[in-house]
Length: 462
Image (cartoon, rainbow, N blue to C red; front, top):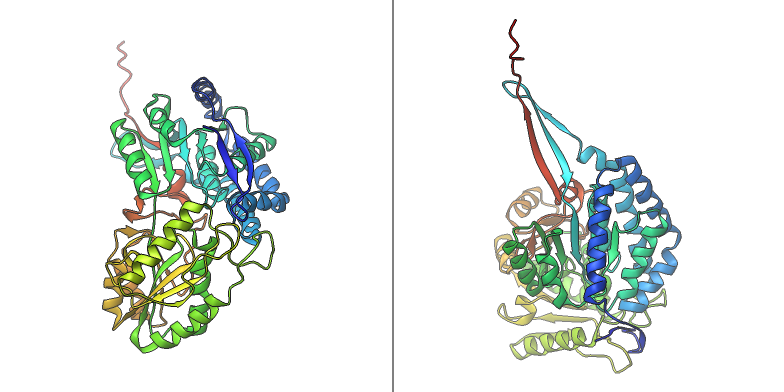
């Protein structure tokens, strides 16, 4: 079956691609394995030169690359150009810091010489999603390649042009042939690849179901894996919060990438004392968002990526309303071509309803009323996910308690959750395991090798 690229703003088929055959996949895996034998011996400075040139290309071509992303998955054009530029920051960070993060570490022991080496594992398979079609890939590519690994990319089937464009950028930056390759394959081909002895490790960003499958397969093969899965991130607002800023950030946090982000705020948990005022302002701002052509720089909400995502979101809202939730704005598909859904706010949401228990991948915001900080933390943690959380309070004691007690891989206090190349990123519970980015990210796919050299006598006799 061919791979189709469909414009989510119009429904038009943009292009079709034939999947790689088994023979073509085999050739690429073999080429990757051969390329690793040379790439792993290159110097950090040689790798850094490629990454720096990649950053320059991403920055210089961010308008063209942004338009590519927008046409293929609906991201508003301003956000798409910002995404291309953010990828450049990852390339520069690891170009400048990989040698430090992976430097030999000497350890004092009782006798002899002891040290730790950080060495690449080999060919890493990356299974990546469509929602951040460049950033998700580069936050793997930059650390993994700088560590001396090579990459094979199985991108989401609705963004094949983005996968090929990334490969082209890296090639033009001077990356040797075979060090990074795209595989145009379906999800059914991932399992056999994980089982291939030449694949050393696997990383996946995607759904909980995909994570279960990939993690289980990697476990059976005793191969390291990193999983970044879904999220139902809480956004807590306490009475001491700077309310204007909290409301403005809440809207941005819910609607980033039209709400199609694992770390978008998805459950708004507001103290009873300020609930009515927060909700009034929040609804006012959400209902005023500009929905439309994602190539128009004035657009704030674009289409959802696929008809299936649109249908699922609409079903989740309908089921939540059937369980007692009230719509304050939105709540329906827009009657126009493309996969558009109104910015939506729900209140009186039952804690066992889809809006509370499931990940909402779109511009839908349930708002919950709580009586105190303990109630807020309880509700925030009452989810199977644990990717990120945000909280707004100027009370130092509350800040410290939230930092300690929120069950998440990332906690933002008085700010919006966002990944940062310099900081480790990942989740707990059903949001996955392992870390990307920062020092931890580049060590995700290395052999941490301990070496001990004992002092012995020469054994010579006269």
